[in-house]
Length: 263
Image (tube, helix red, strand yellow):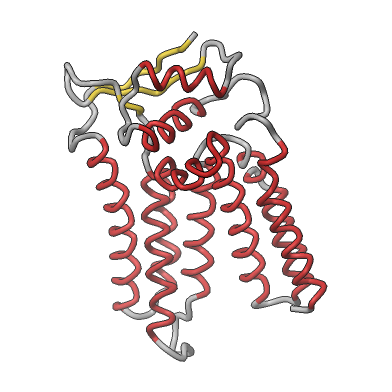
């Protein structure tokens, strides 16, 4: 990759990473949209209270971030009949956003989204670089990221960008891992394959349909050991996300889910 192309890649990465600093609230409109309040409050609750319990303090935080919010929907659940209300969101996204939220406050999830977008750019460019020149790889890699819905979702407090990044990582690493005898070291190829499976398992915990991507990745593997490694890593990723969920919900499955409007 030529020096001008590398500089262009770095400049575009910095632009995407710093984009959240251009807005005052973690959402472009004055009021939150969709599941944004649930994910934002779950992240702040994990950071400040260490749990997913929704109480009065969490609702006060909502109006501190969105002072003009009206009828903000909250996804809640109970694990026992007389238990506390919990935020009914997959905790993987709030957990990953914790260090950024500790540093940047309510902008933390948007900082995470921006960095994930940069990772998508590097993954796409790196994969295309295997078959094209550096400038062409960057052009179409940037076009893939910026022209997709990922760029719009980067300004939402929502795990869509995380899911897209995990799926892209699973495909890029799993598809580019040598399937035959061309690899110099099985450990290097196996590491990419294991990371691909882990990303796929985590993506499946957020979007169950992502598990279907295991089929084309599995068909690409010519050795039984590689297939076992891919599937074992995927199961481990899903189990890791499930373990986090059970730990934060007290080891109980939800018995009721409902949406409440905060006014």
